[in-house]
Amino acid sequence: MSTTMDQAWFDLLMEVIDRGERSAARAACQPASLLSHTLAVHMSYPVLTIARRQLGYRFMCAEAAWILSGDKPCRAIAPYSKTISQFSDDGVTFLRGLRAKDQGSARACDRAPSPVNPDTRQAVINIWREDPPHTKDMPCTISCQFMIREDLLHCFVTMRSSDVWLGVPYDVFNFSMLSGYVLIRAREPRPSARRSVQRRGEPPPIRPQLRRSKSVRVRLVARL
Image (cartoon, rainbow, N blue to C red):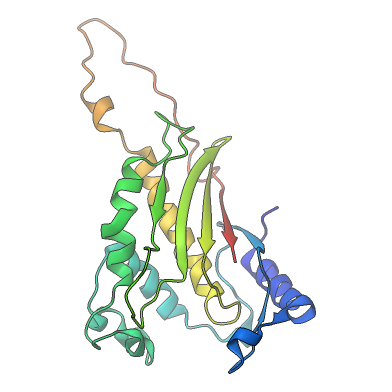
């Protein structure tokens, strides 16, 4: 069952502290981890507001916009973070923006759930690639899948690795914004619908519609 980001994140943090297992394979830092854990967040409430976390909200919004734009220069996001350029291989460009846009999101949006095809299970963005090259910008996300059930858009995110304290608060917001973009695309008429011809004297065709935005709830399920 989905909940607010504040509640979901706090519960997850406590669970890691109480039940997290130390990994001998990463002896340098020995982080506590949970395997096959699922976090469900209601995407109407994707922002963590717990003050002690001290999030950078300007960076949060800028990163989401940057990822959706598919932009790759560091200079586009560097003004919002003093350390993010350290994760660029050459100090000039990033892969992650292009990875999300050019390597699948456009095709996924073309296959996105819509009133014309609400039951599709093919709206998938594959972000991870087999045998990736050595890079500082190694993706933590494996894939995103979008589905509509009972007029609600769901985003299922599978993570290779996810840091509860550092990354999760920003990841949930980013995936929520990506889902909002998919929701907008889902309401757009498809090319096949635009090509339909209405004969003279016939009433306009009735097309199923998603509910208005004020009643459409969006939920995110992220596998950590």
